[in-house]
Length: 633
Image (tube, rainbow, N blue to C red):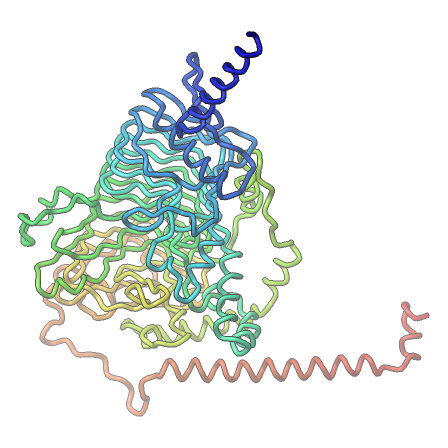
């Protein structure tokens, strides 16, 4: 009887266990605690297999969806948790997601789920109220695998967008603080759609740009063969970053923080991503079909607005960006944006206001867009220096969570070697390009469709059509035409000091359309000093496309591009273009650059032959001479 009872009990226990195992959300909850660990919901640490990553994605979803108002979902400290997301999430109000360990995006691209716009974000939460995302840990995107597949010809990642690390869609009263985010496949943080009242503070965002560079070089070698390897071996002597990143694409669209909505504060963040540091984008709550395109701008109530970004430090950033804004019948717009107290090191773009081209259907429909009331204040950009504390900071951030190994960093010897290689050559190339592009009109170099086009991607200040060129021809290009359907008004640069960079082009670019000029441009204490100050000028497409005022110290002066408001009917009837000196033909920038580079190659060849002769002479020296030295035998 006892044995029969035991047998029945065993069968019952097995059946119960099977039912529990089939329950995808069987979390072991503690009734006395308001914390839910993903481990209690079935997550397994320190295992990078696809099956475990899927199970961990289910566990994370279950923990967040089982939590009630006031609960905290925890990613435990001291372990890596590999995750493939299971689904978009909707959570209870006033919930906290605390990341103390390392949440790692699994790099199995073929296993990653899709949503309507591409690959599902690692953490995607929609329609949340009072959500807090915080912790002492890290979210690691393992972006290298995604970047590699993206640059390959015919990659499906050009059709299906790569995943975002943290996407918080249509949330209100949102807080994101204190976490670190590493190597996202695409954006790191996206506060999308109609974010309302959000506060982002104390976070750090880091991208391993060294791996990106090696990846691009390797991809180009594979595509172009030995010829490219020889060219790159020669150009490796050049120090400026813009000579080291040819096709297919750089950066990889790894934006730091993208935001669309109202009443957003971003402060005390550190970013190194070689792309947009912060990008303020138009909200999806746009004007509907019943809204006239002739409605005055001050009545566009659906704009992204009241966004403040302050106390930001960045290394190798790609711009304090507003946009891009594509004109459409929905009237997308951004207004009332403030950037203040920004420290930038070795950035290839500083303030960056970017309208974009309207789609083809706007030829048949009334389309408009707008960027208005944007202020950049107390911005300091040092284009030639890396802060001494940076490497220590990067190691600390990458080892957060208690599980990661420190990444292998270049040695100090390697750094000194790179800094010593071709310094004179690098500055000489930059000098001649700056000299060639000193005219206030658009540089012919930037319009050329060849390798030198890369030189036109780096600007201390850029107001004009978005510069983007992706594999397969996507994007507007590096020197797109201006867009008359997008209004740019009331852009202020106050106390902006930029120095030390080796920017190939002139001081700044303001590229607006003659039929809809930029208005309200205010320049107050704006100083842009590269290494070749005497030749620097502001670049614009025409003399009468931007109107505003200058005050305080503005150097170089922007009068060639920014005209006073009383010159709205420029040019005046008595205006005459300055006459070119008789017998002096216009400069051909491309010819000058090619001639200079050819001469430079001959110099390198002569130096190489000279070194070979000197080396042979040393080898052939008589042993009696060596014996007379203190080191002789």
